Figure 1 (cartoon, rainbow, N blue to C red):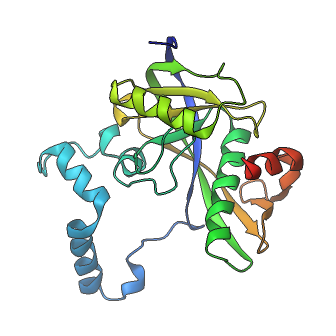
Figure 2 (cartoon, helix red, strand yellow; figure 1 turned 90 degrees about the vertical axis):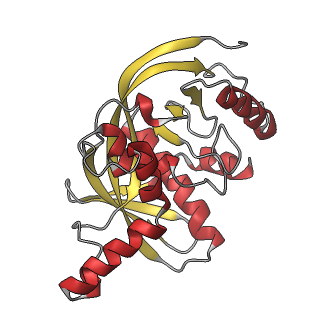
Length: 238
């Protein structure tokens, strides 16, 4: 192994799309019968639920409180990543988390901007929530990787490590200095259920996410408080 593995037992964070306040996704179907039908249909067509069935072997008595069966914990490993991640090309299904809240917000802003830009989305608000996970395992330490390392080289390295069966990698991003990240290759290292934290609204102005609104603190956050403009431009260019 070219890079050392280190033991990790710490809290890491990410943001996921989420309506505020939270709602039952089947409410829009009206009658209880239609809501039940929609839920049953989803069990047949949803890759996340299919992955859950594989984990449990179809055992309906499996402990629903198991960290591995929590939607937030196993969904990232059920869906392919069409644009890839920092460490792996598409379609590897992995989970990226940040060591601190600012890093989690910054990473979420960049990824959400990439998506909204591709779809030419008009100005809108996107509600997101912070999820915190305890991660315990042994991870390859790539935080010392030279910043000039190309994406192709990173992806080749990540593929090799993934095939070697490691738990994942630790890394830094040149465009987001001061934060550290972890890429998890399988959800066995998520030893506890994810914990929901603060809710935010990302304010997309048609070109970028210029501001965030923190629901709990009832305050606006300027983008520059999370990501320096020069660093964001560097990330977009890379």
